[in-house]
Length: 412
Image (tube, rainbow, N blue to C red; front, top):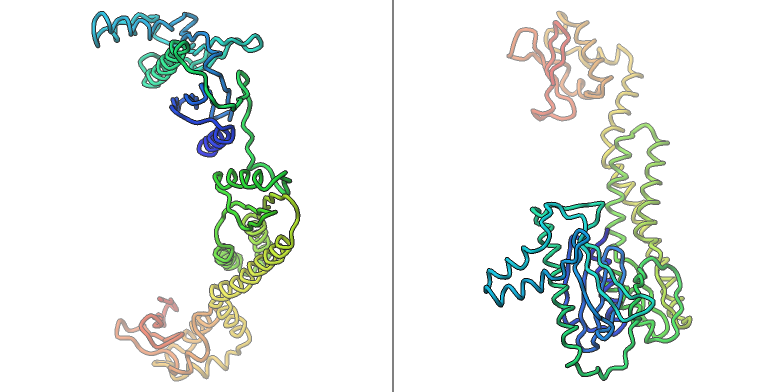
């Protein structure tokens, strides 16, 4: 579950309804929140996981109880308050200890009684039979602490009802009825708005959910999930494509299919992200933006294709050279190879062996005919009597290949 996203939806709904948060009580284990608006004399009870809100006016609250294992434990606060008055700080502990002595809790509910015929009771379930909790666990202490804090807040609201001055505001909440907050990020395409003010408010809500405004004028706002620079993603996709092409070298059908799959995935997920259009009425600016957006998509396609070709060519160039060398070696005659190695040291002694070794090196792509011509064949090494070497692909130490003329063994 995206907790942060749901939490933002709840806060946005409260703000949209004109609810002013004066105090907030949160229980993270069960995703429960209570908000208090003292300016409008109202509380909001929310379940972040379910994205629900219920408003209850102060005047509708009649009583509150904490139910633990089918027993009314609302006196937990009352006993703690009485205990404090009698025995100081220790009394609070004594008062709390008068709750049930069960070692396991299979029910912990907060019950709010309301002055509402249709919905007289609101129950907030913190612990259920499906998931009982031992009293020794920290989570139990957290849940009961939340219940006590909640209960104390409701108790304060009830006691202050006589003293309270009626609010001057005319804001009306949909009280005593739980409703689900809509996740507007699930909407797509064109959304008609009745006014620019409504369009602006809806756009702000999308922005708070992580969307980015990519076009704004008096009549239209276009938003899309902010997923970064398409060119950067084109480069990334091209690198991945090149690696796969290198891995599937020779299996061109699979390589091309993989390239198309990567292109489609990145293009659809990054560039072709379906935009959200808030609209009061159509405008010429929107048409201009659509044309510019098509240019961005074309730029992504061109960049991806060019870079894929460059990166792939860079990775497989050595394989192509080797493959060409192997093809060329197959077309060489023995006489051509003999002419290239005839000036080898001790050629008369190891003529047949040198020919076999040279053929192996050329066919494997390690050496070319030109390498033997440049050096005149195999050169005697000082390591041992049957050791010889040849330079292939350059005249550096790393290009030096040792061979054993007697066993025809090749050592890189």
